[in-house]
View 1 (cartoon, rainbow, N blue to C red):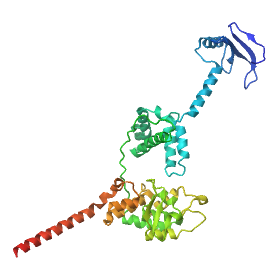
View 2 (view 1 turned 90 degrees about the vertical axis):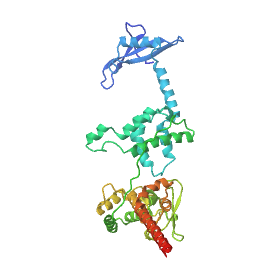
View 3 (view 1 turned 90 degrees about the horizontal axis):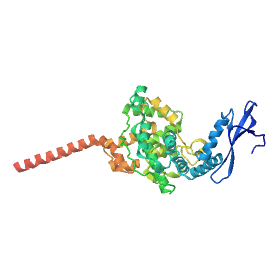
View 4 (view 1 turned 30 degrees about the vertical axis):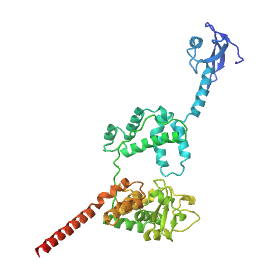
Length: 397
């Protein structure tokens, strides 16, 4: 209670003291109210300042009336409510808390950087303070529209796809929501979503290939590149079909030069895989300089490399490759397309080389075998025709 002279007003239970205005030093009235709660206890609290809160004696009296009627909680009750709400919030596993916990337990995961971008941009604004069980299907419908972007936004940009994301981006954002919900239930942190997410269909069968001229230009650019390590990483992707992060994670202990195989740690499928070490791949790896780092293509400080997109793109531009050609992932497609179209490698073998979890993922290259299959069918037809003709001749004789 302030130790200042109280000045009565014409309103019962309302008085003020003379205080100092914040910032100016001028005198202003500070109003207080007195009232009794349901238990008969006398409550005295500050109603507000004359200038800072635009408080008057009549407004203080109206506030006192609301306190007496129980329409508004007292300042003490309000502060207590805020503390209790904060404590309750800290105990809740909202999407924000789930994301932080999930991220801590998945440090080093290749997709974490993209997941963070999706969470921050799309999920956090509307879902961050909610628990999974509080989400309804309509919330996800709004999220999908937000990620995809409206048709009007795209038209304003003057481009067919500008202002919005591809269906694959929408699907990956929804997948992250589902993953966080499943993570919550698996770790028994809180209840997950109360419904099943209807994932959009994504036509993700795009394959990238290079013509003979483009391949020649790429090899020339690789030979002329000043960054020999980056050039060798691209060569390794081209002759093994390894993913970018698999190459970044590659350590000396993962390559067996004697038995001729490479162990791929933490591939996209989750389980470590072994692929054969070809002669060309062996030459690329054996010429890398060994340092104190355990990684074959180390990043700064000898740790695992995070990215090299700038130098990869520089080599792509020097080779004159298409703008939408993805330097590392595109080379993986070139590797697969070359083997599939050769007619000498079956799809099961190709699946093993690409470390695909299911044959459906490899089927995107099946159409490249059409010419091979046609040749085989024609060959079968010729063999059968010759057999029939020989049979007729035998009967005639």
